[in-house]
Length: 117
Length: 112
Image (tube, rainbow over all chains, first blue to last red; front, side, top):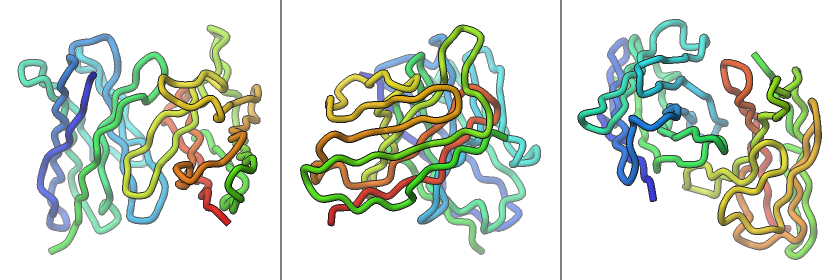
């Protein structure tokens, strides 16, 4: 059974860059599906950040105004999120997710990132 | 962006009674392959979201049959036939047809 696990710093300074990695086990990032990042501010709803295909093709949420980069590392079986120029509004639980033919059917446990000096 | 509006935002339900959540979309979610890309997710307290229903009514693997989805075009419904204690949490509808993918605001299901 495929599992996803987020990792990365739990705190980032304002104006800095948030960097997270999602490690895939029991499956391959080279499979013909998309790999997404979703975030959830404390006590609030879900926001889709963007997705990457194994080819490196990406789609992003325009609300993030060009601050986001999602990439895939097939050798490590991982995909990553970089969000630059962060502010307190970027404080959230960040989830990686697999969007198979059935929808977003596998999610990581999530990792909390706090933007604070 | 496609706006998904859920009602109600809070739903107190007695154990064993039914519950229903509606999701209205600002745009059609029907793709030219004939499928409608509307899903329902459950988020239990302290847990990541979990896929319950995809393409309006298809129940995901392992989801109890007390959960069902219905609807068409721009109006969709999630029904729980008999609420159990483990169903407490927040329910989201989600569309994966138009970029950016979007979620409803969430409906909090709680036990009376």
